Length: 344
Image 1 (cartoon, rainbow, N blue to C red):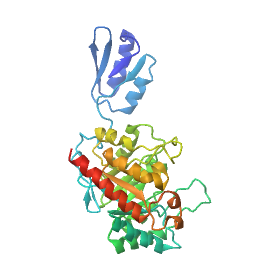
Image 2 (cartoon, one colour):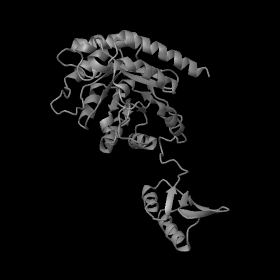
Image 3 (cartoon, rainbow, N blue to C red):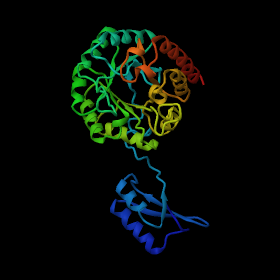
Image 4 (cartoon, one colour):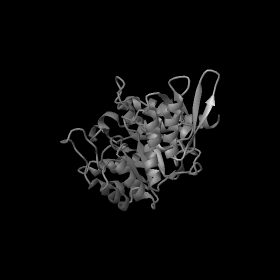
């Protein structure tokens, strides 16, 4: 729907607009009001180049789209009935909990093995563990491929499927061939479209999921869903959206908590939402409240950092990881809120 800056387009302006949309197989239908005329685009208005050209015209105020820009992720698409099952949980039918250490320490693997056993006992369904780590400081620990063996050994010991972040295309086959069940796309790579395409292609024929975190620079809901569309377009519909806080940070928190976007996402897409409260707030004492708020907003699951001894962790664990007791209490309370919402 085209809204001009003036009450209506001049004959010359209408001719220019009509010429543009005709190039893309569309037509213009004026809708004449008492004081203003607006112009409907009849046809596929999702063509970005057409919209960009129209928005670039000096006499156009704005364009409101009626069609969704998402062909696959839209809740009215053919994938609307698609369901994702992970760790024995079908998302939407039971609260999913992903938990584990931020970073696997290859020099002290027992900490991770103990953490894995503890998060399973606390009620988690999926084990998370960082093998490759994005770091602002190039001299900080960047992860170690040796940790992949530790992650999969923990999976064998506990029976839990595992989630780990991939940083570049070379990591994708390493993780999938080793048996990783869920590839995580971190906030730094959520706008890395070549990586998103590669992940979509790689997992298209595998029984694997993608946990897509929201970039701290994604200002709109559509931008987040569009990143997921890249993955789905290359053949993998097993996509979970993960809000994890945005920029600028809220004073006292690591980021600006964004669990409240869950109902906004659910208005637009069928994809399940699993919130990461740990990175949102960045401090263990705040994580439980953020997790419960996420479930209250309608999240389908939680991704929580936990460590059997946070002070011995590396990466973010010393600051934001929950102990097993704290994790168990948070999961129990989250399930109560989940049940309350389901009873409505």
